[in-house]
Length: 333
Image (cartoon, rainbow, N blue to C red):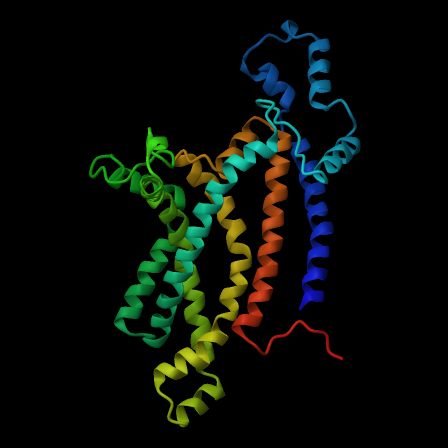
């Protein structure tokens, strides 16, 4: 197990390097540049009002006067010291901006993932056991509807009905804390935070548990048709024991596989939700960085997301051993 983990961690290095090289090249091809954003060339300022000297000085300030491979090498050297550079937008250290935003996004996504699995697995088990029944068909119909609803549209509907639109003003729809929450006690601040994230967490959760419950149902139904399940029933074991002791663990293997891509997918999906609900997280920061062509912030977020993806895949592989003890990563002698 230790050798396997070590090998996988070593593979993270070339994989992240490859992702950063591709990302670094792609963002240079995007229309616009930090210089144009800084000098407001796209907002009507006359071209003759900005001399070539100012443009060149601005490029030199950002290090954009160097060739692309040299700029990437400088960025890579900084990364090894955990220095993501300074933001082009406000000249603050990128690591500080991410340190402020990352805990918010991780909190939202960890809560969402926990809810997804806590909801999806029981629904999937119930649907598999009561397959083709009226309740199963009704559950499937509702889940397919939820899965087909775009998250931004769901967010608008929730704000309209529950966020002070035309109906009830139940949940806050802006930020993660109420004004003046700094003076609250720790329990009051925690309750206030949870109250603010009810709608965003729902928007991040409903589509994921809708699809995951279908995977759980299909996987469990396939396992229930296996010969060893029929043997267990023939021995006189109760249906509950057959289901939870023999069938469920084997049916969780595909569900664990999905976990590998769930966290980075939610971070990507949180871009829209954080923008709609004005949540100061990584998603909103990334969206603002793309609009302002803030290359250091874009590269930092891409690197962190790639690293989380690879760590998620590793954790999913390790979880296989917990779910199915027959799986082992030790080399055969």
